[in-house]
Image (tube, rainbow, N blue to C red; front, side, top):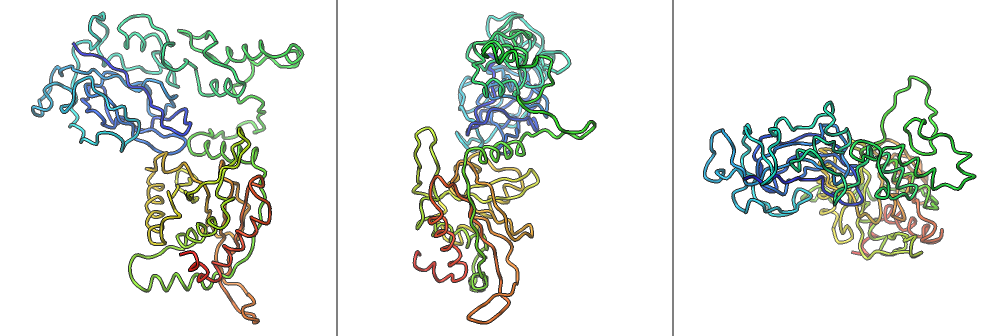
Length: 483
C-alpha cells in the first residue's frame, strides 16, 4: 500500500516568509526522484528551484502558478512506494515507481538546489492513477487527479491555506484540523503581517473562517480587545475598512493603476524604508581625477590575459580602504547596543536587472585579486540577469559598492543597504577641465560619495576612508603599499 507524504514549502532562509509559484516542473501523475526539482518559486530574494525530498508518484499539487504561498504551506503530495497503474516501464530502476537508489520513505531534507545528494533525477513518467493512493488503513477517497485543488472548489484559497477537501485528501478522512505542527492557518500574508507588527500571537486566536481559518476581522477584533479603553473609542470600525496596511491611507486618484509591492520590488521597498527609519546616515563626497586609473586598467588589459573590469579595480580599492578604516566594515547590533566589526569583506554591488535592483555579494572580496574579482562580478551579474541568483548570493554583505555611473549620472546620496554601515557610490567618468600639475587640462573626472552610519564612526573616519579611495583612484600606485 502506498504511503502519501506531504511536501511543504521549505524555509528558504534569511527570514523569507512566503514565495510565489512561478512554474510547476511536474504534473499530477508524474514519477519524481528524490531531490528532483518540482517547482520554481520567486522569493523576495531570487528565483529558486525547490527539490522534493521524496521519491514516488505526484498525487496532488497545491497552488496555481502565480499563487503566493507562506513558508510551511503544502506544495504537493507524493505517493511513496506505489507502483504506477499503467504506462511503459523505462527500465529496472523504475519498477517500484519510486527513486531507485534509496529506500522509498527516504528523504534528503533539501531546501535549495545544490545541497544534498546530487544524484541525477530519474526520467519523469506520466501515470494515470486508477485507484486512490492513501495511507495504509485509510478509507478510500477520490482519485488523485480529482483531488487537485482549485480556487473554484474551495479546497485551497489563493494563499495556500487548505479547505476541508484538501485536508480530507491528505489524511483520508472528511475532517481535519489546521493546527498541529504546521503553520497557523491565515487567509493572507497581509493578515500575518498585521498580527506580527502589533505583537499578536496568531496561535492564541480562534479563526472564524472555514475550519478555523484566521481572517483579517479576527485579528482586528483581537487588537481592539487588547487596546486600552480610551484608544478603542478613537478607533474606527476596522472590520469594515478596506484591506490595506494598518495606518495607511490611500492617496491614489480613482481609476489609478495599482502595482503590488511584492517580490524583489517589495523586498527593496521594505529594506530601504527600514534603512531610513533605523540608520542615522550622513553623506560626504569628493571629485577625483581618474585619468591614471583608466590608464592603469588599459595597460593591464594590453598585457594579455583576462580583461580586468573597472568595477574590479574599484572593489580592490575599497577592500584596501576598509583594511585601514574597519569601522565602516561593520554593523550595529541594536539589541546589544554594540558595533560589530567584521574580519572579512563580503562586498555587495548594486546591479539593475529585468526583475529590479539586486545586490549580489562577492564573498571574501578582500582575499581576491583584480582578475578573480572581475570573474566573480561577471558570474553574479549574468546570474542576476538570468534570474538564477540564490538567496545565499544576495545576503550576508558587509559593505556595498554602487556604480550608478552606468546610468549616466554624476552623483547620488545612496541609501545604506541595511544592516550594513556604509556604501560607496561611483558616478560616471567624464572629461572635465581640471587643474593638473599647475595647469588647466582636460582630465577624466569622477565623483565619489560615501554614505555611512553615523553610529559607527564620525566624519573624520568617513572622510579619511573617502580620501584614501580618491587617492588610489588618482594615483593607483598607492595601492602597491597594501599588495
